[in-house]
Length: 121
Image 1: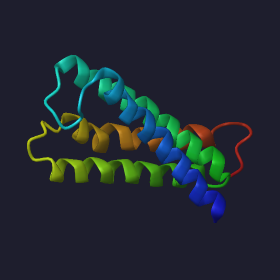
Image 2: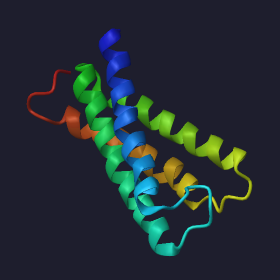
Image 3: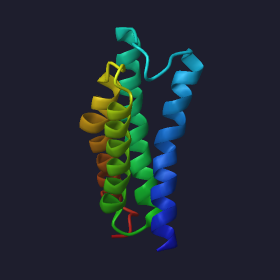
């Protein structure tokens, strides 16, 4: 149980910390209107770190990597929906992409982990 919780937490933080740092490093704010290049950068970066987060969750949890990664994806989707609901002035593209692209990428990371030869199923 502790391994599952730790895996999901680590997977989510693997997504959330770099994603938040992206906005800090670029001087942008995720709730402010963003130039198109930054929107595309944030979405692509979010998909990559979402995938990595799902992989980390699956790896740390050991068993059922897809299920653990799917929980990370669910947390990402919940973050996207909550952010979209709270920030009415936000254009929302990054938050919609969190639900439609980043969350499934996390599940994909778990699936990729499950296909690894050393994965414990």
